[in-house]
Length: 364
Image 1 (cartoon, rainbow, N blue to C red):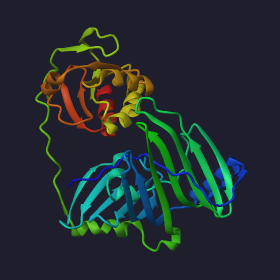
Image 2 (cartoon, rainbow, N blue to C red):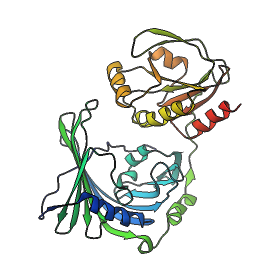
Image 3 (cartoon, one colour):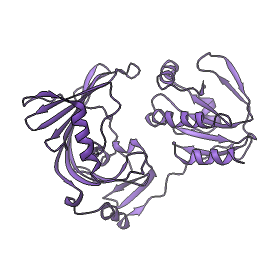
Image 4 (cartoon, rainbow, N blue to C red):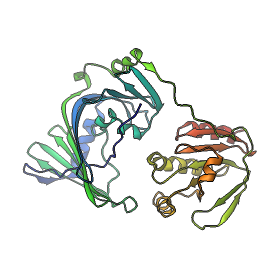
């Protein structure tokens, strides 16, 4: 099935009622107290996206969310359905379920933030569960109907995203009414406006998450696409002649450590989002683990990205021949090599199994 993925770049400035400054800390504290009490949530949503070049998407839909404090990706499970698309998006226990309502089939894939780009995922917002924490500055205003919480962000010179501002509007009970974000993207204004209605919380919801997920029993699961594995799985790693991306010098890779090869590209969102996890693996196990990144496009942007993300493991700039040698067809792809130089496993996309397998090799 094809998923309609859109960029998650957001907002319009709020206008209208009279406003006055209040303590951001007081509003944030009250918001957090309310949000911490929410375990079950449903709402209708209208989402308007304005893109560079003047394109506009105006969509509506329904979402049902269930708090999952053990979930490390979203922190909740969800069911999402956009009104104009016969497709349902369900996220549960670290897995994405993508349902085609016309064909009565569904696919399962590892959970990830990219799933919010699916049609059902586009109606999902964490505004009721999580306070914004990764901003450059923040302040609050009181309005006739509640409060506005403002956030600004540092410019991203790598991807030319400038003047980004986010506004979360709360009602008098400190519950979100809307989320609006705007920015200058590649020199043109882009925005997203998300407005919530018919909000129900906890006992008001009436149905639990399992009742929505029960729809799966009426659908047929599709077998996952079979990727042709690297021809070297189970074999010794061939001699690697690499080009250091920072120095341009040729390097012959030799190591008696566990080796993790990370194949990535600058245009690959999941690759970039996985950088912190790969870096964390390297820092946690670097006495036993060597991590090398392999990229083939946009050398200057790759260097800027490595610096911006504070990546400390070595990266190398190769060509298509190198990718063909290892049969790399998707990104990110990871190859795990044991201490004896045997390629033991291949991973399509980052997942927690990587650390489990590395730890197993460390303890052998």
